[in-house]
Length: 306
Length: 228
Image (cartoon, rainbow over all chains, first blue to last red; front, side, top):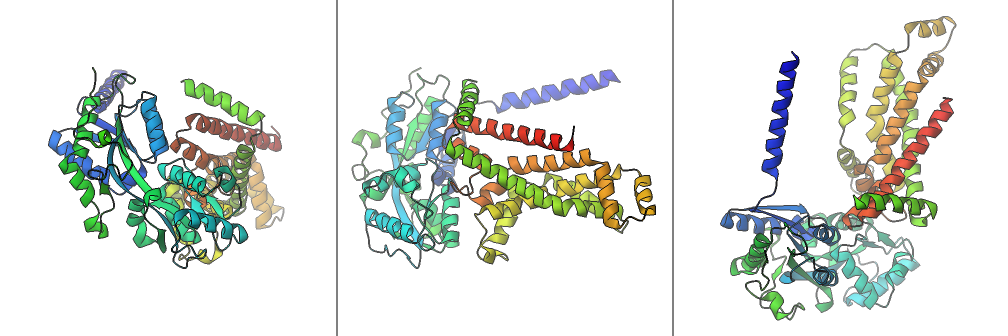
């Protein structure tokens, strides 16, 4: 009887070990950490699918809730590459030796969205004027005018902070100035849904807003201009700093993303679903989006040293 | 490993220095979970006692259903309550979505199956003689209920503590119904989830340790109250 149990136990252990080993990473698996907008809109999965079919590899996207956690995953060497949107932190990531180089892939714009009725009357203003007005009217009557912030150190939250700064405020002063400012600590979609429920203003990336638009009564009030640019960048992890990362495959995928095919997929994405593209290709607009020429080069300049 | 240690250190630092943000989050967690356990005890314990003491058609089925709902996913409760409390939902006019009141309601629903189920099993242990004696002494149904509950108070305490533990540690309802608003509906679990998504892993560890410490304190307090 006890032999039988032991046998069964050993079988179980063997099966578990085989499952574990076959699940372990190998040369043909690429792991990507990214921001919620690229993942939730489905663009990155589409790109990954095309790439993995062409090269017969597996692409996994384990981290997809924001630039903050994506960078933290990168600093620990848990993934092979990042696709994020926060220039300051990207530069620091590369400077600290974690990543090889920034490669500009795509861009769109941030939108300042709010309730149709426009209770603060920001229609026609530029973004700094609009934010100033929302703050003033919100502090005067927080029942009427509210602003919902991501509050999660994501790329969009970083952008919001820098916009408050250009409007002449210190961010901690804004975040503590009363009930009109709602620090949601939530992903983009959840933040938009909350802004909708509360009839509040919010800063959103264009792609997530388009994806959620049909469920929202919010409309964009500020939707363009160089101060609302949102640039997505890929960075392969530096194998010298993080031995064991799959640098070759990361560089291959980045080269795929900046290739004719990759850029076309990016520029066409969303046409069928939303009636208009929700990302623009970086190629041809390199200086417009504040990238250096080499950050848009084809193929990648970076090489993996073994 | 390093991060776990520095998480511990940071937890001590946050507790000792009484960081106002952390104190606020902790107090809110405690208030919301205690409120939901207290309110659901008022409903669920009598309800459980009623189900246990009566014989009716479908009783077994109801008990099986309650046991099944032990594994009710927190996000499912969150979703359900979210739909009910949304502006265009049936209780939208209450305007308690994204408020602590909404979170309390959600957590009450979440822990109701556990509280009712454990009440039923605890009272099942009471010997019928207790009830019969009480009845023969002319006790009313309410008095019988109180007597039998008193017989198994340590099992009842375990039920309440389990309910409290589930309410305190869940993140699905708190996130979906509370919305994780700083200074208003941000509780320990949603703060942990947020700090993790920001990449502040040490602070997340520290908040987790604080959550466990609270649970320890509440356990000790309840046990003392029960006189052990």
